[in-house]
Image 1 (spheres, rainbow, N blue to C red):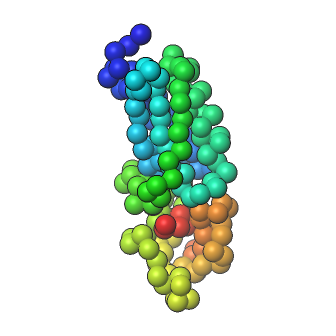
Image 2: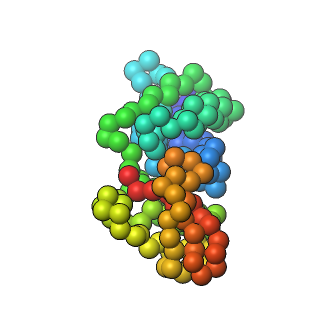
Image 3: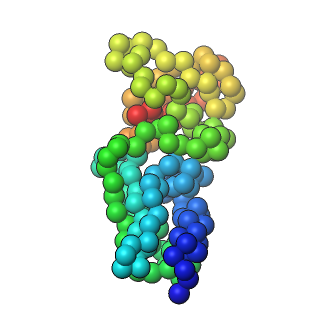
Amino acid sequence: MLPSNDLRDRAIQLLQTVTDPEIPVLTIEDLGIIREVLIGEDGMLEVKITPTYSGCPAMGVIEVNIRAALQEGGIEPVRVTTVLSPAWTTDWISASGKEKLRAFGIAPPAEPTMDKKALMGERRALQCPHCGSNNTEMISQFGSTSCKALFRCLDCLEPFDYFKCH
C-alpha cells in the first residue's frame, strides 16, 4: 500500500483524466468540480465533488467514471461525496478549461459571474467561438444541456452554446 501522500497524489493524477460526459473535451478538474481528495482515518480515499448545478444529470456518470479511473489505477475502495455548499460557480472553471470550451465551439462563461442583464431582458453580446464576432444574439435560455444557453452569430450565422454563468 502507498503512503497516504503518495496515494493522494496518485489519485489526483488519475482524476485529471476523468472527462465530463456532456462536454468530453473538459476534465472534471477543468470544470473545478473536484473539491477535495482526502485520506480518511480508516485509510479510505475520499473524493469530494460539487455538481455544476443541483440536479445535474451527469453527476451519476461522473461518480461512476471517478470510481472506474481510480480502480483501474489500483486505488480502491473509494468514497465519493457530493458537497453542495458552497455552490459551484463558473468562476471555478480553469483558464485552460475556458479555452478548451472556446476551441470546442462553446462560448465560455463571460465575466462577471452574475449576469444581471438577463433579469432586465437586455441583450448580452458574446464573442462567437467560430469567427470571433461580437455580433451575436441569444436564441434560447436553454441549449444542449441545462447549464448552457443557445446563441447565434449574426455574422457567420453559426449557432453555438454558451456556458451560462452561475
